[in-house]
Length: 589
Ligand code: ARG
Image 1 (spheres, protein in one colour):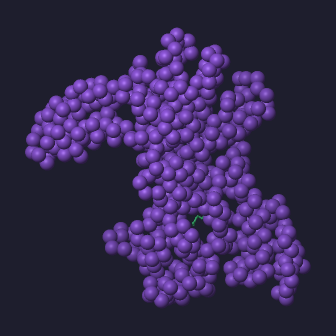
Image 2 (tube, rainbow, N blue to C red):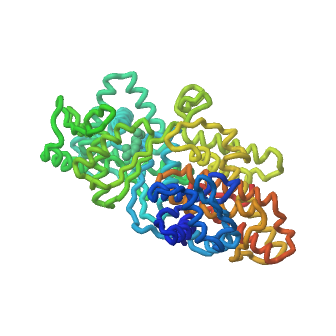
């Protein structure tokens, strides 16, 4: 199906063309004066410059070719040369009916199907998820769903941090506790046990213990660094122990991400890029791109027109260790080999921006990816407490993600139980679904790059611009549809939507008609907040219509069935919208 703006632009373009101006001047946009009209066209202004005529004169000439067009209820030229359009009810009804009966509400396959990788987990093995992991997970998952819905081939990668110092820390702590494990015996030649020497609860205790010991004991700290290097050099026992840490941790992280309804197609880690490092670095040295500077191997990334001084990208430190930049570059080598991506999106804390500028520039200079690969850094802002500083627990510690989720679910549970008799078990189930919506919507409705204040009260409110409000609207529609079925004994699924009767109904249809244009923008800008704004405005438009209209008691069967069809479409689009955001609606709430 054609987008509604394109449809209107085509009609206008034809009229511009007939009047002797180019069809390109017929571009329509949603009106910025909804009190005056639904759509507008500013093309006469642009044409005026090119043809050296008064814009209003051009607008009036074009209008001559548009009189009596069934798509418009009214169309007029206003000073200095705007064309104001009110769309006709029949045109809108036909468009609604088309959307309702098309797959994906009329969203077509893109002209070019892109291969897209979204890198959005960033969790570190051996450490539990904390509040800082919320935004990449939630934003990345939504971006992934938006790209998929737009028709592209998309792969989400957790990109676990499994190459850092925490590996050495856990290994050394374990050596203290169980020195007899075969992993620590350099002469061990046999098969290592397949069972990990610890459980996830052991690991949860081991890592903080190791960190504390490292701070207190310098000797231990040196050993942790050494163990990390030996692990990175893939010494047999260390590599094997590292695998256990990764696997035990991964299983737990999976459960945690599942709780957030966040799912990765790939669970690669930084360690998976290691096999690509050696050749990549050699290549960069051979081509002269990388050079020695104070013992380290670096690549210059400055570009003409830079307003800032960018330090070179270090690809090997003086002690020979590969670092974060190297890993991300080698991961791109791997991704290029496996997926030939047209676009790679990184959703990571915005404080890592410099790192990604260095990696992206080096990757292009070294030809690791083609020049036109869209490497996109979505630097997310922080989740702040009421004091507008990054969220901490009461005693100043890092807040675990699970604790944050529980906090929101508890708040929703209390709201549900507040005024109603409800089975506690059912209420807890509903609270989980609604809580997730509160959490995700509270996050996604903010532009990704901005920091925001985590306000449990506001996020869990059933009114206003919140997740629960959207869910409440969907639940309300479901309940009307159920009642309709009970009362009239039919399943609904009507396919014909009628011309709107009142303003609120027309407003609802206009909102729905913008779905495809919204999706295009959300995809173009990889911006979930665009979807949030849309579902919120749509929910509002629906509630306005519902307030104005007695749907179930309407006696005219055709009218009633047209409204039920409109409700079904509204519900479908709202559900699709929240699915793009990564949450779903309960049956009741
Ligand atoms: N593990 C990293 C951290 O905790 C984040 C990884 C982000 N993704 C990436 N490709 N660098 O800071």
